Length: 505
Image (tube, rainbow, N blue to C red; front, side):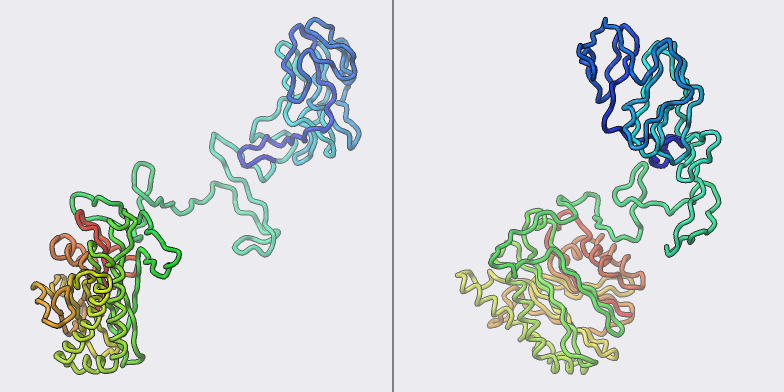
């Protein structure tokens, strides 16, 4: 049978024969077009010795009665296994067609015309249309698509076509063992139109005939009247060195955790400018947990390299690793000072750790023959105790970046003043050391960020207002939602962005 909605009634057309006999030539002055696979007009007929031209007298087909003869009462059926005619033989003009055409039942392999072959024989692939002016065959016309031949029940696998709309017929019972379907012998569902399924959702821009995107899916959007210059998604990949594949930096890094009363989210992503030019991300992000139990510490450290400085990516990554290693080695003393609230001890100890990291950068610059402040990066660090009874949060760093706090729906810049000058003999060549220790309150959100996000937070009021509206909803965002929030785009700000936020329950 054909596909649903395109079946030719209950008549099945048998396959094409393997050895077609001589095609039929009607007794007309003008020769009709040769059927597919038959000889061209004027070519010798199989079994004859001379070509047949337009004026030649047509020779009677051995299987077709002459014009004055009377056709058989029933069509001739070739023996079982023999090849039937390539096309059904139509009686010539003036001859009488078969008295009773035989129509095979639905599902059989008989011919769609009176001269059909049995189910085991091959028949025509398409019906033969008689030439213009000749008497048509005496057999009935092929029923229209979707109609039912009288005397034969409809095939349940065929969909009826009524008034141009498909109507579903009862489905056949399914076999046993199929989950969610009736077993063998189960009653078929009542006939009728199919039940409407769920409405489809089209992802992408809306318009006529298109559904809106899923409302729960995070999307990358921009703020302000004009869209940024660059595209919102990554473009070119950075060039890779086969001998230094460990130095490859992914476009985006996501991290998250939940301990006691707070939830941590962190992300570092390549800026629009670097994505467009195929440059690597210069910002670095590192999150680590040192220790176990209530004495453990969670460290988040991020660094943003200067776009114009050579080796900015390597400098940011090296600074994060150096500071994190130093914090891990001093974890027990730092955790004890945080629980006890020893602010001065924490300030002096973290400043020494930070100076050690910048000292390595100065040594690298000297090896490359560059000024001391050539290989540098802005640094921000956050220490979080795992003890649920301790609400002290410690921030430190140097150079470009920022620390902000969202409290009661309003943002507070915890580093409003310019960075203090670096003290002589210290390694914080990117700027003076910064330190902040505070007690978290329920509902607070603390945000650390590199310069790529700190600048628009201070210079564009629309960005902190949008983040305050998104982050004051109660529950902290998931990783995907946090990434979409931190990459809210603004025209004129295309640097890398790295941020870490802590939500207090």
